[in-house]
Length: 326
Image 1: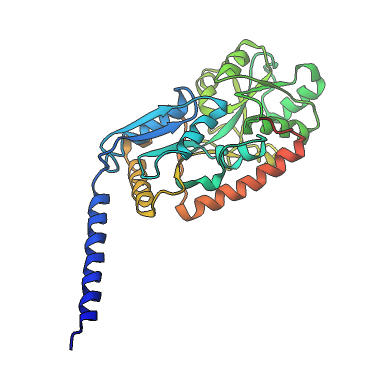
Image 2: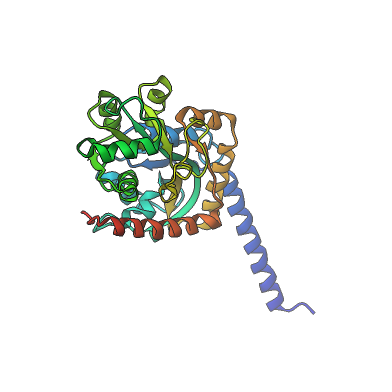
């Protein structure tokens, strides 16, 4: 006999199935609400990379706007993304350093990595150590450059996009590992490359895309890349491991994050849209022009990567004696 209780259970089950179907249908359609992708710097490389991927994410949303929110080293954009609606309509596009590095170089952060759900990495790039006209033409390898720095301590300078960045610490680590004082000269944006080409500083530790053109033209010399393997954009340049400095091995990843309260189905829908975009010829060709390689890390491994890299950089920052700033 079918009881009233049986009918109620069956009715509830049908309702749940219907609701599930409604949710599935809703998620199957692109979001009608305008989606905002926040980046932390003025329009440039990072902004271009975000736009490149967003342009192939029509399955996720009908309208996607990339917004630059520069200031405080990128932290303004992170804070804005943290407080945004957790409905999939706002996300952060940023280097992993915002999550795994900033907690160790700033005294006060108005966010924590746990405030975000990592969605997907999209690309990675090694750092490139280049030298300019201040360094004699016969200096062609990292070993040559280290010897030259030891012999010319007043000239041993390197530029980066700013103090307290991973690039700053990579240069500092080189000096410590090789036993010479490597003076850091912080710049904003691409100023380091401009001064390097003018002979104002000896070297630069910068993302590969910022100096690739000048390396290819012969105006600058690339001595080493920090990736785990040789970079396809400068295949003749050895890695830091090949040059004898494995502790300098490092990649910069770029990734999407959403507020931690964002429902799992929306995160999964966004992840799927990003993966689809990365498989397109348009995105792959665009990344090659920006001198980055597609690099996707599975969602379940993404959080673990942030945690392990955070531990590694915490040790590095503490070893250099760097004092966190506001």
